Length: 158
Image (cartoon, rainbow, N blue to C red; front, side, top):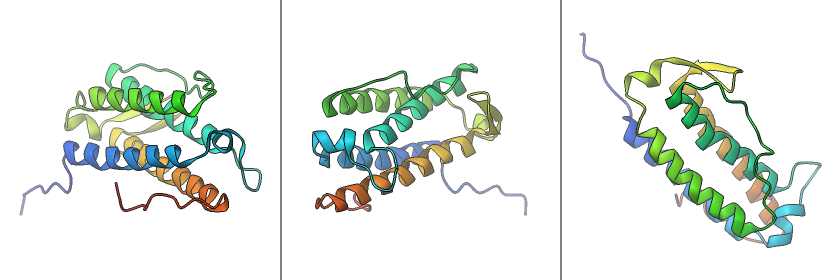
């Protein structure tokens, strides 16, 4: 048997990822302004800092993959002081993701790409890392919200 089966196509992967981004956005929204920037547990970074990491990865990484550029990871490039700024940047980056993701051909997902000059994996593995990393940090945000007495959004409501 020489048939090739596909589990997900690129559009389904994008929809899955954007579902996670939608949920992470709702976690950001649930934070009181002060706690978004200051609250932490056990020495972990405040959720605003975790969110900045996510913003520094997704859009810039996809742009680098499409352009073939060797940009560096820069978590300090965006320095918001309000939740509204973070949410506006989140929405802006969602559009960047949509724009660049659609420019990656099905074949390119299998190609190796040295992301940020340090993560040399097939494109699909880099994208799965973006999703996994977001889920991980969103989980931290949900723990923070519960510690603050705030019910986080349900993880299955993406």
